[in-house]
Length: 379
Ligand SMILES: C[S@@+](CC[C@H](N)C(=O)[O-])C[C@H]1O[C@@H](n2cnc3c(N)ncnc32)[C@H](O)[C@@H]1O
Image 1 (cartoon, rainbow, N blue to C red):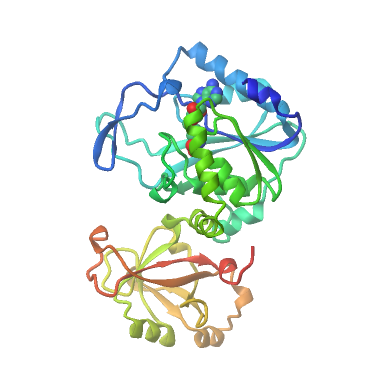
Image 2 (cartoon, rainbow, N blue to C red; image 1 turned 90 degrees about the vertical axis):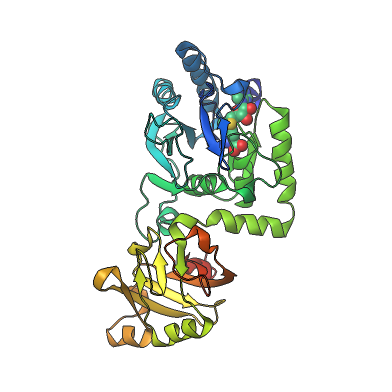
């Protein structure tokens, strides 16, 4: 709180705050197949309701003058703290804009079996000023969502291994979550503050996206981890790799290509017909949720032999893909498409055991669906 006071007033474009949730009460969970205690550290031990309220009111009060008049704040939490945070925001004169539900696509099981499995966190988005309009990059969010309005439910996986190469923080947030938040409400060159920075996930995402960062934390150890992460991205290749990783959402973009021998693949492209099935598949493609929304597919290998396909829903949940000629015959021109998806094939065979619905290990590959903007270099 002392450090917060030192920051210049009206200088911050956006704040992301991941405060203590006050949930370290000796509960249990699962990590890498092992039973572990959920306790995060002394800083996360619950106090009295009065203490939790006073703590949240104080730091939120100190944050408000630091924001520019059009600045916004995001606060993450669970039922342990988020309702108190909401009350404090309203008391302090912030205007609440949205409550985002972050649905984790890979939640650990609930071992007690006395509750529904906890799979979500909530993120309140509010702005400083009741009257001054905030920044919202609506079109960017729409594009990230495949061409349709983004909703307030975000399906994003928990923090992954590739984000922990410098060590780990007990409550580290995924870069993919911060990527979306930062892109939603800031522009290049803006300054982002995180008053509970921990391992500085916010800072890493901010810097990778060309934004400035100020982070505060009570733990020297966590801040050292943040500094190591910052050093790691000073290598341009690492920065590029992480930027690419965090801009992908594997849940929404992966299709599994089964029986895709190189010659079959080219035949598929040449003939322009293949079948996508959402369930168990003997066909060519098995799709993950989200894929059903796709209307067009552009198949290519490294960009040279790209071909655009329109997907037509067929019998029994299968989809037919039209080739360019068929499209043209039916009066289709590229500008008619709301959005396109690019499917570059990767040449690494898939871990078959993790995908019991696929019948064949040989020649089964993962394909990433990417927005066309990526493919043609638009930012
Ligand atoms: C939920 S964690 C944030 C994790 C971070 N988002 C990340 O991705 O690594 C909360 C952090 O707040 C810090 N913290 C708790 N109480 C604090 C306080 N009073 N002042 C400053 N930092 C505090 C803790 O050390 C912890 O690192």
